Length: 209
Image (cartoon, rainbow, N blue to C red; front, side, top):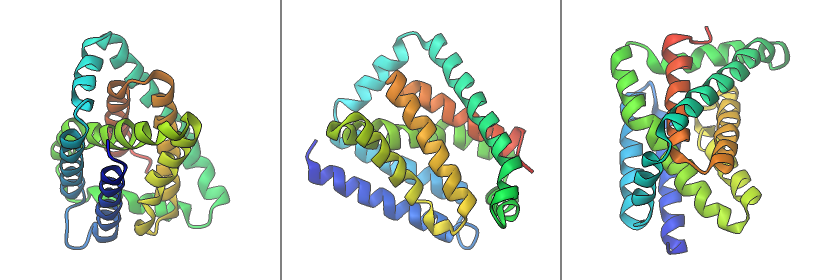
């Protein structure tokens, strides 16, 4: 892929996600905007990176049961990390408890079924397709570790407009975890499942509040 196209799509992603967290809760619906962001970005990725979609289809066709189990298992590990962090953070970070509670304002007055459907079919898979399978994969051409670090930092940075230190740190932890998972298994399908299952657990079924 042309480097300028890659930079252009990444810049658009930064703008869309910064606006998402800046405006969420005021004039826009967070989950709708997040889904729209992912549809736009993944459409551009598949349009300009012609080899990507066939590689995902190939990924799905190989050892899918094992990948489902790994996706669910990794989500469970990440949930435990956040469960422990939810206990420790308020002890060492001023205002952490309030920041954590405010994150759940994103789902206020929203149907759990609607959120779950968006997470399972659009947002969960879409974020991994874009941030790990597209951004990290291309940045890793500069070096595996450097690409992983850059992708993780950028993923966390686009959450800055939320002005919520716990959300930014959560994005850094999640980005690092899913980045390492992708670096290890090189399967975007595992990442997609892990992301969706973790969000469902943390936001709907077993929230940290």
